[in-house]
Image (cartoon, rainbow, N blue to C red; front, side, top):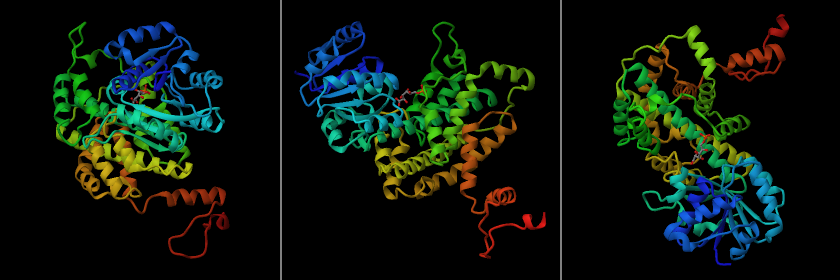
Length: 465
Ligand code: 6PG
């Protein structure tokens, strides 16, 4: 046994992670269900080959690792993970540790943790796509602290580093906590992407801008408050040209978005937690609508008229996106706080923001400020932190202008608009739920609280009927 760690599953992410681990100096044993894939991987390891031990059987993999062993699983989430855990059970001892690094549903991770596996177990969210896995992902661990500490040297060595040098790898909490935080990361990823797509749509359909002009605007935004990976790649994809036709790349891509489920899980879980995350929910909804291409075509034939022209400045769109982003993250962090309480995880909000600063898909400059604001007072809604309250105050008029003009001209802006709706509710102390309470009391005698302290929790409707 010469390997310090093992890895199962040499798909895109697993292969990249294995090379990253080898490159950081840790000898790694690898195995894939299809032996040919393992051999092909070993051939591509190049100068890292001396640190990669390719094995043809699960038994050989286990034997190649120095006990107590640590084995990373990078197989598709769901049944494949259970099957792999079952296969490992007879081969491992109670001190060996298996780390599920796929995009598992955190409920599954909790279930596996509670099922009494015959070895140690961690659930670990890994973000950053292939490039991140190869050169520095963000890593969100879940499980017992002692188990995390065992692999922390590897995880911090392979993780991305924030500008201040801190590795973007940390234990979030027990069992499913790491996969939970990764799930919310993906929900926010959906929302960031959707808001960017909405603003792209306003520029394309309302302002008549060509892809290259839109790219230039994204590139400019990437130098300012919105500086982030997703804005950076938005500038790149809009600048790219199709090698087949010479057209701008986005113009040849069908507007039907795929999804593997993590965004949907975030929306479902938010409902269970009574956590308002309308921007993420709108983003999930928009992906679902995008998938219904036939219905949209029929809808256009019956009701359609192209969305109308807009007189908006790029600066207003930038401010709208800044506002939308802050509102979305405020919602996401509130949901995390709610889960922390519900599941007894004591999740560290500023630490989560710090882990997201680099390596992951939603990495951005703004996350530095969010980490600071949350460190200042983790219990306070992000929109109330002075730094963000000021930013929002400046940016909301633009969001309002963009959303109202866009809606008036028939542009679909579900994520930006629902962010604004939430904000308007959040700044209204006297809302309209008194009407809901009156109705509930009328039809079901559910009772209400009065504003004036008079001791009567029902309306006169029963008496007067
Ligand atoms: C990441 C990504 C990654 C993956 C998502 C995409 O953080 O690196 O989120 O996990 O790209 O699964 O999700 P959809 O396929 O649902 O868009």
